[in-house]
Amino acid sequence: MSTIVSPQMDKRMAEIADKVHNGERLTLEDGVYLYESDDLLTIGQLANEVNMRKNGKKVYFIENMSLYFTNVCESYCAFCNFRKDPGEEGAYTLSGAEMIEYVEKHIHPEIREFHIVGGHNNNVPFQYYVDSIKALHERFPEVTLKAYTAAEIEFFTRISGLSIEEVLQQLRAAGLKTLTGGGAEILSDQYRKKMKVDKANVDQYLEVHRTAHKLGMKTHTTMLYGAIETHEDRIRHMLQIRELQDETGGFMVFIPLSMQPKSKNASIMRRNSAYEDLKTIAISRLMLDNIDHIKAYFINIGPQLTQVALSFGASDVHGTILKEQISHAAGALTPEGLTRKELIWLIKGAGRIPVERDTFYNEIKVYE
Image 1 (cartoon, rainbow, N blue to C red):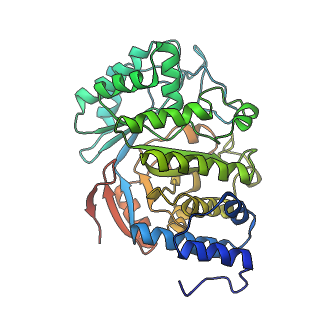
Image 2 (cartoon, rainbow, N blue to C red; image 1 turned 45 degrees about the horizontal axis):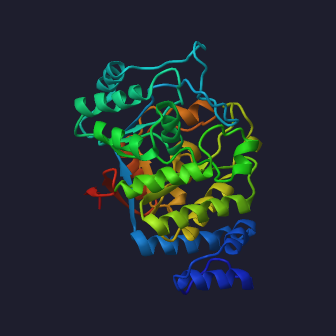
């Protein structure tokens, strides 16, 4: 590339830029340096270069719905405001029939994916979770079921006595096609202890995805940033994902999730800055050279910043969603969903080409 935005690029940044131009892999030290640099525009331009090399001007989205069978959870993660105790006001556990009734009120013919996550409810057996998937698959066989986090899969092994592989096989037989990316938070056991992440540890999270990949499944993965973690923690998180991707090739997309405060009335000082969000998306694109897509998640960072992120390495804006609940149970101030027209407008406004996709990034329609 002949143009870099910053005319004051220092020697270290120039070395990293040379690596990016030549397709060389960045190191832990490179990643930490990028986080500590204030040269956001150079970082963004380098990330854009990598993304353009992988995806050109195409930006992907999907028509999907977010579904939540239960918010009852045995865990008390410090950052979560979605979970409830059994019997607590607002706690619920829906049957398959109740979920189908809800879906039938909101679904339209273009919906291609159900995105399903929820609480770790140990008041129901593993069979409940299998039956939930089966009920949806039998009623809506044309819709792809993207369900459960790696942390939920680990939870299912504990309440069922089955292995990870056995749990996945039963869920796949019921209609499961892919796993969601949640439950990763920050892949540091020290972080997880401090943040009371009372669910799958680092090794278990990675092993669930490793097992899914070995079974032929393609999956998603995330990083929840903006709490107590250091910049080095974030880069080490990315490197663990990169190493597993080297081994299996099973991740389709990496999703940086900006931490939300527990109250919608929280001040801007309790939220990640736009600067930090853009930098994290860009650095994710630069570090994760073996994953095709980085997602800008408008639920966390808002539609306008999502649009800007398309020039900072992002190639996916998620989907229509329809009534997201987990981030909004915390302090998210963003819309609970966007329409197809709004997503197309958002992408075109960034000078990019909207591409409607299925769950596995097969192109459905290109909006030139």
